Amino acid sequence: MPKDLLDLDATPERLRALTDARVIPPSNLERALYLSTASPPAEAWRRFVSSTLLGLGALLVLSGVIYFFAYNWAALHRFGKLGLIATAIAGTALGARKLGDRLAGQLCLLASAVLVGALLAVYGQAYQTGADPYELFIGWAVLILPWVAMSRFPPLWMLLVILANTGLVLFQQQVLGDTDRLITWLAVALGLLNGFAWATYEHFANLRVPWLQDRWMPRVLAAMTTAPLLAAGEAFIVIPSEVGSGAVVALLLLVATFAAEYALHRHLHGELFLLTIGVLSLITLITTVAGRILIVDMDADELTLFILPFVLIGQVALAVSWLRAEARATGATEES
Image 1 (cartoon, rainbow, N blue to C red):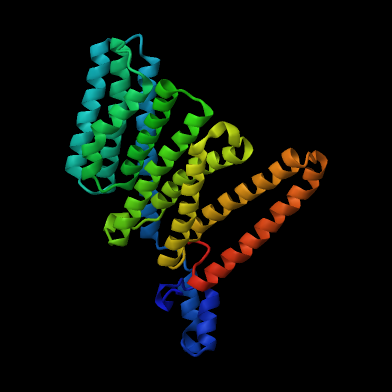
Image 2: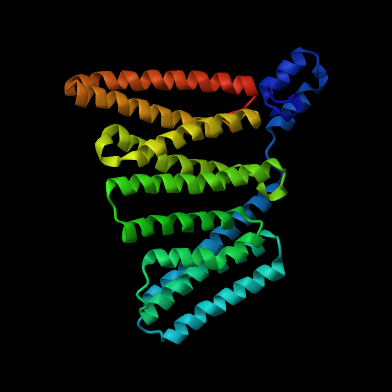
């Protein structure tokens, strides 16, 4: 179902079409065109610059803390190292408590969560605990979980997801091994983990939770869900005898993500980014299948260089045509 007219962006083309249809009086067209193309006011630019600089400043300070300890490691006593980081964590946590839900307070809480990881790393190095790296990331995620649960800050939730992904990857490498079959099951685990996070976000966003209305995080989660499943699917096409049943499960889950992306696109009346992720994944799979048939089954290496570009161009042309049709059907714009 197309979007409601009031939900569409007021582009000059649409305004002129509405004027031709006598919805907008011709005398008001010039004013409407000015408003649709006007630059944001000075106050909006100040808020944008202030927020951007505040975020960059927080990231630079955090990176400076890490490099400070790396450079002065030998000169600092272990109690000094731990004391400085603990003081920084306490300070940023108190700052988050005082500043509340403002961006500065949320960034203070994010800084506290990042510094917890630095504290664990310094403790492990100072006392040579012998812990594996995956234990660092899993412990880091567990320790900051209360802060994440109480926060209403998507970047902090994204940090938790990244830590969980990193811990899972390192656990597979350091404990289970890195055979092809285990790697495909790792891809399945990552797809399920990120898919759960994605589905949870979309569920509460659909319930109109105010701080979950931005679309950048579900798009990142959708890409994080699709990427490992696509890699396992590619492996199944190229080396099916070596990857085992995990790759088959990954392919089935990848098909499920295609369905979810299309359903969300229709439900949200235009989510072309998610739809594009699905289309690119499908193009990748089809191109790989065509390449395997030509190179492995037909032993036509020279012919492959001639045929595959046409296969790829044809898929891209069909994909663009279909995406445009979907955009028209849902009233989506290029920003969707």
